[in-house]
Image (tube, rainbow, N blue to C red; front, top):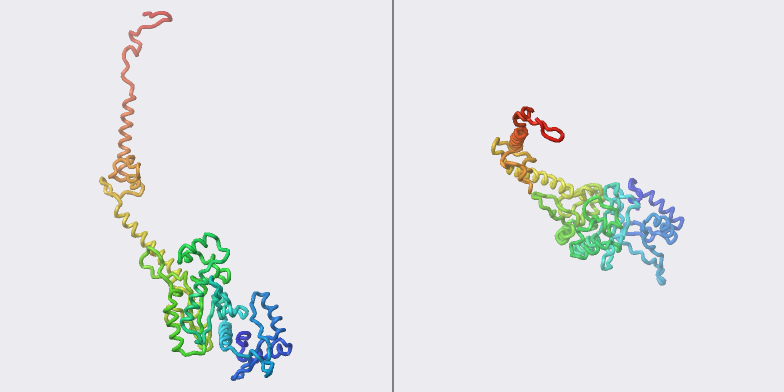
Length: 404
């Protein structure tokens, strides 16, 4: 509690004093004391009502009230069993908050994700830390009480939930999703159900899932991660881009769940902001944002595709230059305009001699026009006038008769 509320404090005195003050006002009570003298505090009925009024109007769900009930025969307080798993969840949230990852009101526990068959997959912890570069992340806290394959099933259910459409999805998207099993991949994430629940992740793919292992050995963690990595590959592994380009090394993360693993002990020893997160499919550990980023993903693809497009364009231009005609008269290469004139469908008959360039063709046209002009001028020159045209010996005509 003190790590979550006062991460800068080195001891829990302030938190303890606050709890004692709340106890005086009958808002909290001590439910049990553990063997290591840790006290388990819970809300009273009055405290639960007040907390509900304060938090639910902010959109924060509050847990169920732990009622104070006693055994009628022994008088012993019932329901005092302490959950080590719940403590691990709270401690994980505290370590994230201590590293500046998420506001203390940005954590939610036991968040349900209902699948199409009615099954509800509950995340142990959901953190929203947009200021840190993690708009949303789902966490599963495992104390190795579950089989490794059960974690694979959880991952599968998160992936299936990320592929669901909302109940009021448009008819076109619904028909497309039903057309074939992989059709959902062609429906934008903005139209899916998960975007009604969580903000965009700022990265490719579905909301990330982190598995935090607690109170176990390194060997058990390694074995569990190996099973999760191999058996869950369908849900976390990126694919090759479907493109005609060659030499594309980028990977498509658009339809996968980014999966991270760490241990609670690492978070406590080094801090959640340190390089303690390992992304499935990668070797070594990274910081949280580095593990979530995809340096070989969408950005690299667009860079490589643009480079491939430019290379392909240069190749096509080179091949076109090799096919460019050469003038049979002067040896000059055809311009694009002249090439178009000599190859245009239905218009090549206007281009004159198809084997000559534009300049030589223009010279031909000029000579032809000059010759035609000369012939025209020659045709309109008047003939030599005869004597009659000069009025010599030409009879004169009167009004009614000819006269000499």
